Amino acid sequence: MTKIGLANLLQELEASSPTFTIRQDPALAPEDSLPPAQQFASAAALRFSATRLVRTVCALSVILVLWGCNSSGVESPKPSTTVKVAPPKSPNQLPDEDTPAPEKTGGFDGKRAYADVAKQVDFGPHAAGSQAIAQVQDYILSELSSAGCTADTDAFNSQTPAGEVAMKNILVKIPGERPGIIMLATHYDTKRIDNFVGADDGGSSTAVMLELARSLCALHGRYNVWIAFFDGEEAVNPEWHDPDNRYGSRQMAAKLAISGDIAKIRAFLLADIVGTRTLILKRDANSDKALTDLVWATAARLGYSGVFVNDTTAIEDDHQSFSARKVPTVDVIDLQIPYWHTPQDTLDKISSKSLAVVGRVFLESVKQLQTK
Image (cartoon, rainbow, N blue to C red; front, top):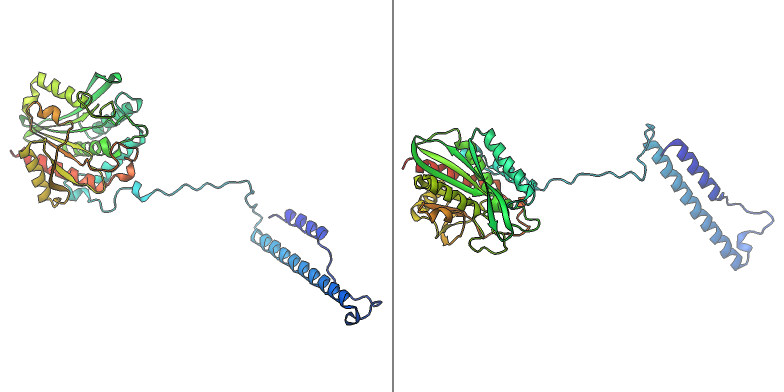
């Protein structure tokens, strides 16, 4: 409140508040000599006047306090001014504090992988053929380039229940000393559902593969390591029915069959939905038993038998495009998530610790396969 404002307020109070003086008219008899009715009226008037006086004093006290608080001469904010405070970030939107450091996971950075998930989510829903998926493709290629990886792209069109849809596969090729290929894979497209960003379904496994590429592209082992990013894994229709699914993996498997490279693949390791906070990975009955044993034994050796459990389920996924061509495959996936194919598949469901666990198991499995 300014000095001018204070003066105005004082004037208003002076005009609206009567002077409260208690005086006795000498012409009147003492109050106790008045009739009872007049004595009651006189007492009420005095109480009313005293009350008004107290209120006026209180108001003046408040004014003086406000003036003193603003004695520096700085104007107080106008009543119409709105102060907006940005809401704090939810703890669920940050990497887990107990995420193991890269030096404890063979170099795999779970927090950096989490950032990759967040970036994909930022692009919004990105179903095959959408404008948003082009942004995801550019991001993947940019991150691979920054990691020193060489990546090939294969743009193709697929006939779907929604008509012809443009798609693109991305393939990293890390050379080895011998012709054999160890192949790692994920899909990066999202299901055609309103507001579905696929933080776990597509986002988590793509992040794992990006971080694996950062670790592996600078290494050259006995065998080649290829890392595939498939488009068009999700069915266009609500339900999964062949051939409305696995467009990208079928495309790549067919091309590698034509080139003869499919026969060189010694192992195919697929990741899909691996970021949930309560990660439970069951053995897939549609995967190669020997390769599954190798991955699950590696996880047990690293202390992750509570995540890679020995229960069995049957999964239909991108690995079947390769197992159909007699490639040993394994699918690492948690399909028990309650938010599967719903708009609730969001970043808050993702655990950077889970990403680090899966990434470490994949890194160690690749090391094991390089010795075979």
